[in-house]
Amino acid sequence: MGKPKREPYTPSTQWDMGPATKAAQHLTIIEDRGDIDPKTGKRHNPNGIKGRRRVCWVELYGAKGTLSGRQVKAGLALSAAFEQTQRSAPAIKKVQVDTFPKPDAHVDILVSRMDSYHRIARHIPQRFRPFIDHVVLQNRPIRSMAGCSGGRSQQRYLERLSDGLEILADRMDL
Image (tube, rainbow, N blue to C red; front, side, top):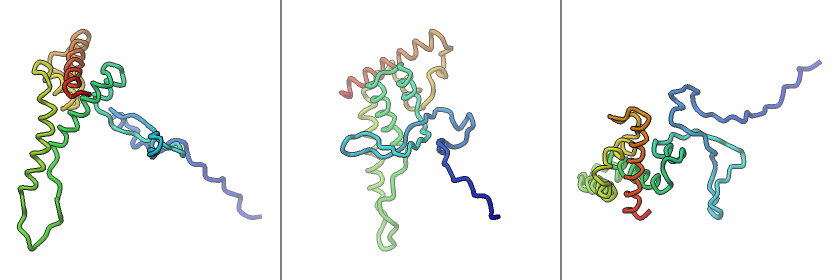
């Protein structure tokens, strides 16, 4: 008698979603992974692979229906421009021994990033700036803002955030 046959391997339908702790899953969503078909523009995922992606509060408020699609687009554009200002300048080329470093190129990159952020941020009305700064730039929930005790004040603060992002979307022509 030989060895008993081994059961064939059947992969689980759950893909690796990272650690299953509460902290690791905070502000994340599970979505399909796959390639986007250039002809149709749709995601092609023949194996049904899913993955976990971290989202910001603007996206969460948009998914809940608190913010419209235009407001979410304006918030994400502002957030992306702000995040670019927080990054250091890339290495333009590898270190060369025979040449002097040219810091002007790094400064130009940083200045252009600041310019693109200020081109968007100047459209934010002053009275809505604290709400947009708190949620969009600092990625914090509106309920953690000073003076927001929940209930009516949270709803009022969300309305101010929504109004500010609507004005920003109008001025950005989104």
